[in-house]
Length: 305
Image (cartoon, rainbow, N blue to C red; front, side, top):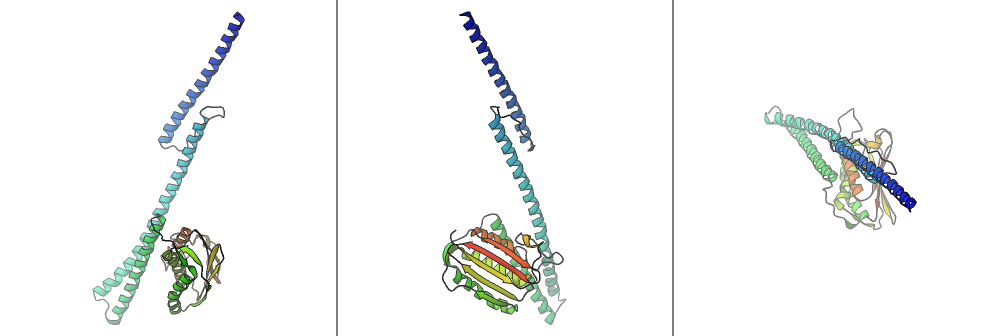
């Protein structure tokens, strides 16, 4: 009987020692977790909690490390975003300040009668064009800000894309002719119904055509539409100077300027707006270009959003 009691006592002692060792390990881990949390709270997102697979607190340690990693990633993205916006504000300041100073100069010359007669009329015409440039720039800027902040409201309705495209292009024909551009339009006569935001789609084509007129240095634009049951493909092509392989991957970035050797004739937001509006329609846009041969923009829009 005494042997059994002795065995039971020894077993109980072993269990107690085991439980005490576990509790000591848990207490040690909790202390490490506490110090790590304080360190992370103080801004050290590089802090990690070391653990073993056998530890009871291992899942808690894994979760804390995951939170620290995610917070660190978000902080890096926030800093990158802040830096990008600082660069954007600097660029915007230059883009507004330069034409505004020029506009003020022309208006001062008119106001103080430095120029008279035909020269005054010419100054008024130039001032008007510069004011229009600033107006378009501000409009594009506000549109970009609304798109970037996801505040833009879209109204998707069922429209015949082919008919809508023909109406948009019809408004561009006199502009293309005035700018001495030849044009080739190939839009199917069949009806192609799909849900689309009319204003956004109109802006997409307008921005692409405006970009070609201002920057391509070409004299011909081609627009073709291909369709099937799943999607529509819109191809807009010019025969201009083309875009270099170094610049091509960046042309849809906001404020990107391909030709850094001269001031841009546009506002450098047009293609960025195009891409955002196409993304809203769950579509894609790509560009292919050959120097001195032209650029091809290809848009793919799914029929079902």
